[in-house]
Figure 1 (cartoon, rainbow, N blue to C red):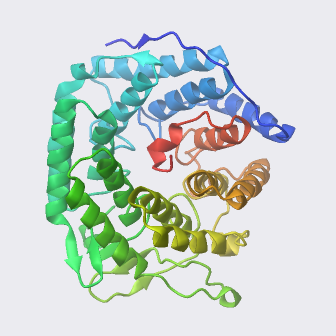
Figure 2: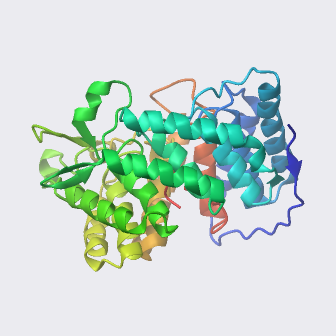
Length: 407
């Protein structure tokens, strides 16, 4: 299999008044990325993520060497398929074939490559079969489970065969939705099946991410009435989990991370990030409020978002490094997306503040304080950080945020 390139026209517009230190840091990061070696072929940890990084960097800057490097990484992944040496052996968006197909679809739609995706019909069938099995066993995770596959199917529309896959998977998900007096939710676990007793509220592993994917399906016209009612009921449950803040006693988050299904005991911390925290719920409520025309959701999102603006230190955010997943780059990206979906300028200002915080952490070498081997990870390392910084320099260019559900 070969990647056949389309010719690409390019023009870049740089934001006025961008500090030179951002440009300098982008160049430093690019050098570090080019000097490293990817650990595997995956989207969020390996070569597919580096391919996305380079294609997007070309989109931002117009530098031809990026598009060549993006194609080279993609060719390497293809060659591993041909040699039966691929590490993409599961359906996961993060580490498997879900990520592979998502990236191919993305690059094909943007005409960076030409690839007949119908050649991968057997992979699509495999993804559907595996995702249906995952739904049956409550492994619905966005990054690792069935919802990552569903998101890929939705992005493939209006392909008729893929639409059948998407509808089949949505119907299976809707049959497993849990309803109680507070509303509705979808079970999930990350490591242990015992986690299904916890109603996770996050974007990365829980209800916020699930609703955002189902909203995409709704906006495509799939199972319209069922999804409308399910989304409303899921948000009803979500809103019932709010908790009073108490900054004097270091309680800053409005939403818990999760709530126990039976006891209603809440798991709480001050995480503010792409993966978890109040910015997740604010973004979700803006998106659904706009799509459904529900002003109350938008007003609640305004309150949640505004309450986050003074959370600037590690104690109130748990932010100690620069990464995208739960570091400063992720917070900057979230505020940038909040600005776009709401129209509020104060989110744009907050994003700029967190860009500066990200630069400070990079200067200290604090890329990812959880793992020492994630420097080339799109989610937890330098590529994701660079894309956020480039997004500040070259506005309205990158659409890579759709992989993180904040486009």
